[in-house]
Structure formats: C-alpha cells, structure tokens
Amino acid sequence: MSSKLIWTGAVNGTLRAMPAESPDAITAAAQRLRTELEKGALPMISLDFLDEMSFALERLSHRLRRYRHLLLLGIGGSALGPRALQKAFAPGQDGPGHAGPSLWIMDNINTEQLESWLSRLPAQDTLVLCISKSGGTIETMAQFFLVRDWLKREVGAGYASQIIAISDPQPNLLRQEAEKNDYLALPVPRALGGRYSVISAVGMVPAAFLGLDWREFLQGVQSVMEPLANAPDNLAAHPAWRLSLWTKALMDAGCSQLIFFSYIPAWSSIGDWFAQLWAESLGKEGKGSMPLPATGVTDQHSLLQMFLDGPKDKGCLFISSSKLPCGPAFHAPLPSAFSFLEHQRLGDLLQAEALGTAMALESAGVPLLRFEAERANEYGAGELMALCMLMTLFTGWRMGINPLDQPAVELGKRLAKARLGAPGFKEEKEALERFLGKKDDIVELEKWRKK
Image (tube, rainbow, N blue to C red; front, top):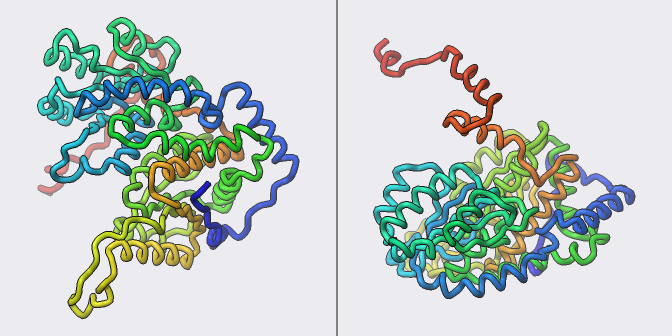
C-alpha cells in the first residue's frame, strides 16, 4: 500500500503490550481464510465480481450522463458508502453555485423531506436508484412505491427507463418489480453484506454518476485485498491481521470504544460508514466496542475533552495526510496575537492541529494508531476502506463471532411489520400486545411546570 500505518503510539496507556500469537493459531486462521475464499464466502477479498461490474458500469455511463439528478433510495450500507464517496470527492453539491450532477440520498423515513424533494426535483431530469440487498427492506421499498408513482405521474409511459434497481441476484420483491416493469437491475454479490457493499454497484453507480474516478478507487481496494486473495497463507504478514490483533487487544484491555478520528475533513463521512461496519459486524453476544466517528478539527471543540480527560476506555484510529491542499496564504499585517500566521497557509493550521491532537491523545494515554494517506484521493480512500473491512472481519474471527451477519437488527424490523399488520409474525404481535399493555409512567411537562 502507498499509505502508511504508524504504530508508534498504538501500545499506550491501558494497552500495555500486544499479545503474542501462536503459530498454530495463525495457521488455523490462514486455513479458514483459504476455505472461505474457496467457498465464495468472502467476495470483498476475492473481488471476482469486478470485471462483470466494470463492464456493466461502462455500458451504463451513457445513461447516467443523461440526467442531472440521481435520487438514491437506500438505508444503512446502501446509503453510507455512497454518501462517504460523495462527500469526499464531489463536495461541490454542498456549495454555492453548483451546476454539476447532484446525488440525493433518501435514507430515512422523513415525510417532510420526501415531499419537499419530490416537489422540487425535475422528474424528467432525475434518475432513481433503488438499493436493497434483500430486495425487501421495508423503509426502502415503501419510499420506492411512492417515488415510482411520482415518476409515473410526472414522466408518463417512459418512466421505467429512469429506474435502476440494485439487489441480491436471487429472486426477491425488488427483482420481481424490476422484471415485471422492465427496470434495469444490477446485482450485489450474494455473499457481500450491505456494510461491505460500497465496492459493488451500490457504491460504484453513484460514483460513476458523479464523475468520480471509480476505477482508481477500486484499484486502491484491490491493492489491499489481492495479496490475501492470491496468497491466503501469508495472512500473518498482512497489515489488516496485525490491526485486528490490536483491536482485539484493546477490547481485552477494557477499551469499550474505538475512535475513528479523521483529520482529512473531506473524509469525515467515511467515519459514519465505518461506524456501521464496526458496530453491526462486531456488536454481538455481549461483545464488541462502540465506534465513535470524529472529525478534526471540528470535534476538538466538542468531543476531545472526553477523549482526553474522560474514562480511559478508548483506542483511536487516527486518519491524516500530510499532502492535503495548502489553501490560501495569510498576508501581513495580522493582529499581533496572530502574527505567527503571516505567510503561512490555512492548510498549515490543519496540519498543526492534527499533530497537536495526536500528541495530546498519546500523552493522555489513549492507544493511537495512525493511518497516513499518501494522497487523499480515490485510491487512498479505497485503501482505507478495504483495510477497515479486513480489520473488522478478522477482529470478528478473533472474538469468536460471525462478523458477516446482524441477527439483532432483524427483531425491530419484524416488530415494525407486525405493528403495521403484515401477515404472519404471530409471536411479534403477541409481544406487541404485552408491550403496549404496560401502564406507562408519564410526566406531562405542562403539568410539571405548573406545580
């Protein structure tokens, strides 16, 4: 990898040493990696879907260029990855006078937002991208039915050409809708979970629409993944394996929180993506650690006090780059209290803040591992995100849990469907009756204020 992992402060404070690994344990893990690759259970490492997907993206590029707006319907991994790439590499949409392509991500049940966007978006110039790995995500499909009806009303008979569906290749509701109505449908590799899916059409279609260098991003991903795909027996030499040893050691040392501190401001949304990856993969069986996304320098003024002087239960993955744009220069004269800034650049301030925060965290006893991006471009983001995926996967293996499922999340979805009267769900409906039959302990604020 062209970027660097700097381990100088990784063993610090509550983490007094890195544990030793037995050769037998490493051999067993390498054999597990080889076996799961052979079974096709780890497409994020094998990347055997890339050629087919790249060909599909090339064919799709002409259609993408016809539209000014892309309305993405998706939640969780279907939204967080695309948003991270948009914020990092197409930030113009958030600024004044933007005239390029715009990506609108509808990732929540927000009636005001839905009605506002549909009243303002020009339907003839809007492509709709519906993403559901299962093909039946209730929030996404509910929004899709409403947006589909909006397109029908506004566009008429040709509306179907403005819908793209991305889903598991196996039969499901979204695929049935696509086949019945002649929507373009693209696959998510079957064993590629939503939180790992940014490297699939889920992330690459929005990236291509925005004009990002998605090939460069995938090259960064490949630079991290291919050494394992080609030589799984060399697992112990891979940086992600050592990272997972560190993260598991942090948990064993009582660190219940892992800070993802980005001093590449444009990459701040990668922290939100990482939070889902880490929490949904590892929060199981009473185990795991809480991911805490933070952005430098913003969160020096909100969270850093807790990081430095709060409970000593945190480790930190610190993201930075010494090769960010320098920005405008400060010209003399400045007020005497700030004269030290004269002839320096705004980017120098960011670098100084990053150095100061890293030193302060280390001095406070926070185990700090630094990822130094060679370039804060698509390739570097691909490296970082691939490394995070592997670190998460291998940490789950070390914890003895399955990092590729999310069993607890499904309960809330089943209860919501039961509440709405969906057929079946007998146990959930009975549980709802018991829950709603409880006598609530209520304090009415108006009555409280009058006392």
